[in-house]
Length: 172
Image 1 (cartoon, rainbow, N blue to C red):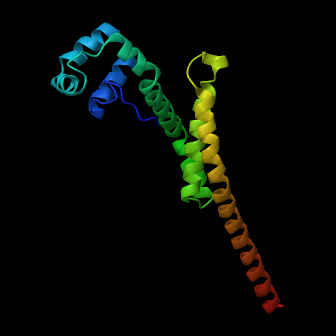
Image 2: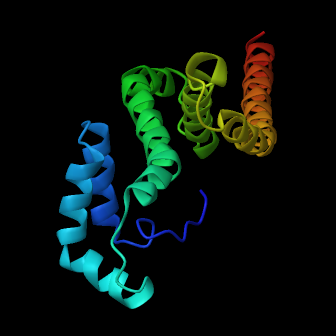
Image 3: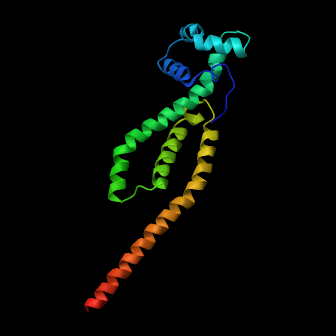
């Protein structure tokens, strides 16, 4: 996640969350700015760090293309995980899985699916290539973990086979 220094980015999380929901619900910039600039928390920040200048439409536009878009991406990934949840839980119980890398694989797969859905050919906006690149880096770390888990499962199955052979040989 990018560290932001804008007026909106410096507001408390709860206010940024409300801004994001208002943007998501289609409120106009004018409505959001009237509400936002009337908040005591906003006024205190603006007075202390920005010479009392109110949050402007360009500030909100900048947020919409940065912080809000990151928030949307996280919301999309969470929704994808919610939809996958029952299937993943069923798979995990059937496979006797539950390892952290299994959970990470699901999270990364969901984030990758969201990033791919936002490719410029589909939306013409944002930097999905950057998001995909970051996810690829994470996948590069996750792949050895997953291979290790799979090798451990394979080794466990091999040991079980050997033990069954020993038992069969003892009975014979």
